[in-house]
Amino acid sequence: MVIDLRKCIGCGTCQSVCWQINNAPPGSLWRRVVDREIREYSWFLRVFVPINCMHCSRPPCLKVCPTAATYQRVDGIVGIKDELCVGCGYCVVACPYLARTITFQDKMRFESKRDLQEPAASKSDRIGVCTKCNFCSPRVEAGLAKGLIPGSDPEATPVCVNFCIANALSFGDLDDPESEVSRLIRKNKTVRLQEELGTEPSVYYIVD
Image 1 (cartoon, rainbow, N blue to C red):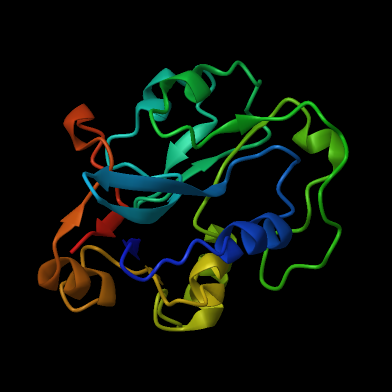
Image 2: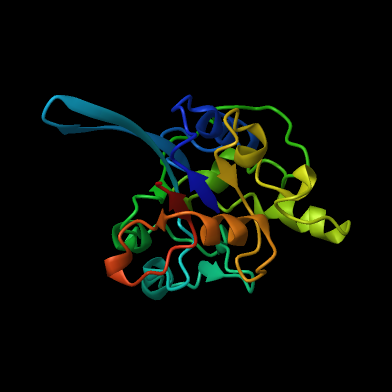
């Protein structure tokens, strides 16, 4: 994923639609938009930074999971197998991006239907289980099965990207030099959060 900080207006649409479409548990932080001011002498700059799971190439959460509930797909997406998660919280502590949440509430935020998503988890399935952004992987898989291209075809693209009113979010194959995300990274100055930790995040931010 590539996030253009020059375009993000901090509206929070990506955060809201993620919670609703994925029926995220109350208090979960699958997506959040951090609001920061950069001040220097007489001027200041207000910056909005959308944050979700970084789907690291070297995810620290994967190493500490004692039940193999956390796994990494061949396309790089990091997921969680609910049936294997015991809610130990090791991955929550290991993640430097605060991208994982364990909820102990049994009331879901939304009950709406989701297009091309997995069936809503029952309340008992979510209690004590770690959850996080999965780049709408069921949606991506359903699109691929139809021959669609993630990042180009909305039906195969994460909903946060589709609903961003500022077109600040892009999604695609980082291994494909012709993909939109690869092109954006080549043509712009980008950074990744906490690169010094060696996690190799798959989310890039355009800063200039």
